[in-house]
Image (tube, rainbow, N blue to C red; front, side, top):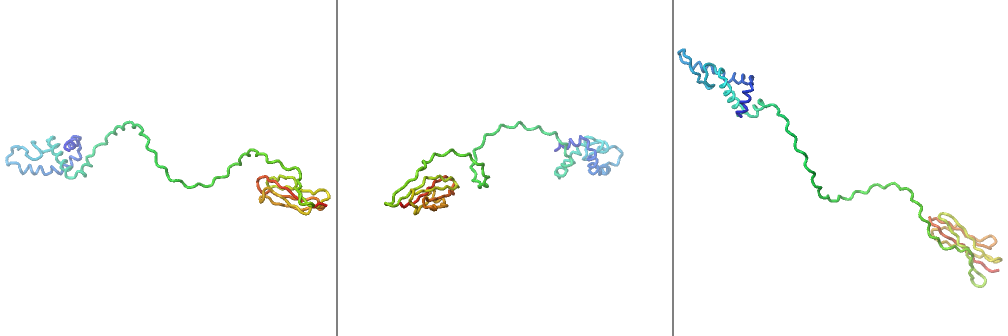
Length: 231
């Protein structure tokens, strides 16, 4: 602390020294006058401000020492207050830190988080390519088949007709010439995925006509059959 005070005093803070000395040293002349003897011989100055033939201000070393002691007393009395008065100049900025260190190792893999909420339904994708052609089905019957029912009656079926998906197809079963149809009907391979749209005899009772509609997306088959009576 004494070194700090000496630096301030040696820097020539004339304003502070003048204010300090004005208050601290003002009583010195009166003290010297009351202490002087009656004769006219010069007397040695024995005041607390140091030796000197005249005023204490004539001694530069004494001035510095007394200023140091005064300022030291102020700093001891209230350091927070008086240290602000003697704040030094701002120092030069420090040197920057060293280079960055090497990259650390990768930490362990974290735990799997909770399952997220289901997202919104996506848009319909483009239509897929047409699939390969399916295997060939069984060969269709190309001839009408007759089955005897007793001595005077028989049944006969038509050829098998293909019914494409979501389309209609028809078939006709015939009696032999001169015989008459007494009944008949329609058989389908896709029941109940096919509707029978028609089942009736012809006007001359020689045939039985039938038709069916496929409501699915797959191909099916149908046949008509007739019950004939011999004439």
